Image (cartoon, rainbow, N blue to C red; front, side, top):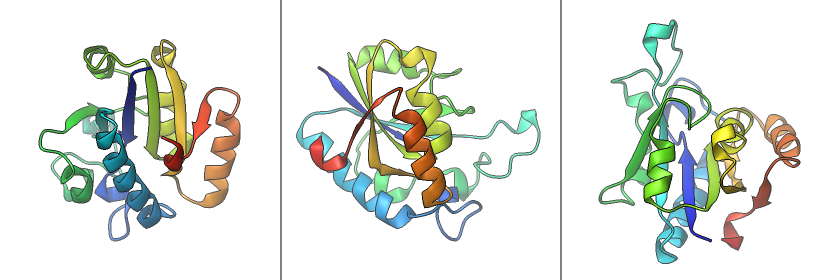
Length: 170
C-alpha cells in the first residue's frame, strides 16, 4: 500500500513562548523529526498541513496570518528542500483544501496521521468523510493536545474509527 505521512499543525503557536502551548510538545516534535527521517528513508511522501486562521470569520486567537506563530516549526521545514504544504482553515484537513488532489497525485492508499491537536484536527482529518477511500492509521506517539488526559480520551474515542501505530512501527 502506498503510504503518505500527514503532519498536522506542527506550528509555533502550539509551543512554549507562543499563544497556545500544548502538553509534551518537545517530545512530540523530537519523535516527528525522527519519523520524517524514517519516512524519507522508506520513500514515504510527507504532507505538512498548516492551519491558517480565516480572520474574516471573526476572532482568531492563534494561527493568525503573517505572524511568527502561524509558521510551521523551522526544524520540520529544514527537513525538506521543497515541502508539500496544504493550508487549511478548518479542523478537517480535507475541507476547502487541495489535500484530496495532493493525495491523488501521490497515489496515496494509506494515510499515516500525526500532529496537533489529537482531539481536534487529528481526529477530524482522520475521520473525515473524504478520508474514507484511504486506510487511516494515527501515529499515537506523534500526537499531542492540551494535556495528557484529553490526548488519551481522544485516542480512546478514535479507537473505533481508525487503526493505531507508533512511530517505531512504520
